[in-house]
Image (cartoon, rainbow, N blue to C red; front, side, top):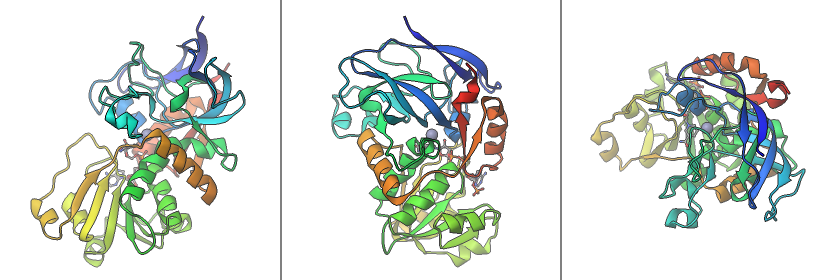
Length: 349
Ligand code: NAP
Ligand code: ZN
């Protein structure tokens, strides 16, 4: 007998999300049943619910920023107990055997990682995400949320946190390094907090100066509007690292010109349209243009522990299930401060 749980789902590409119920599988030996308390709204949810990244599976219950409490465990689970505070991010399974899984990079599993939603499990069943009241997840894809972080502000860390932490670490954000974060949205605002906590000197590059006060409060020392052309002249050759979190295409050459020789621009933003750049923007200065996809489970746990140590959580606006469609519009219009989080108690039941 499966568990029926309340959820909100997009019935078709671009359709408004509406209340529904879904079934969660019976616990396997290594499964954890989680009572979801909060689910963050990531821009990736919107890209997928609107089928901006190609064909998707409908009905879709989005949500890969999940925080809650363990409600039950399978007979073989030893790491978690009922009542533990836990989170689930973008993946719920991988083969566990390939070189990438063994290197703690499950996101690059050669069989393909199983996405938390809009995916198909190795059992052939469609996956449904966190905009729901309960979820069943294999224990090795569950992370522990340290006591120091509230579940509501922790939820966004499961995607926005790891997606910014991983490249900041990999590309050496730290003391003596000048880091620019492009886009002060969900990913961007956590990127600013993390880069500052890692000891880097942080600059925000936003479309306007509307959020300047917030950017400086979050840990940036400088803040510039990219709509002002003089910004690109003034900051030429300045940064060691540019973290691009923007969900739309950018004029890449202009941003590459802001890098010091040897500097790197890392894209985590995932617009559906292609980005283009001139080879000379890279050649002139040995510059690097890179990408980064979430992070492995071990690194996600490391990030959560780092956030607890440094008092980092997301800046959130709690919404009800009914408000999710409006929240999607606001995210689309860059009107998010800085992550919408669904209080799943409002999904009814
Ligand atoms: P978000 O909250 O909407 O933030 C994106 C920010 O980009 C906006 O707040 C805005 O900041 C800026 N922006 C939006 N449209 C723009 C435009 N046309 N020109 C210039 N700037 C613009 O989105 P998010 O949840 O942080 O996600 C950001 C992107 O990362 C999405 O594409 C998402 O799919 C992707 N993502 C990737 C990964 C990965 O593993 N690589 C993981 C999660 C998400 P300002 O108002 O400050 O300019
Ligand atoms: Zn996400």
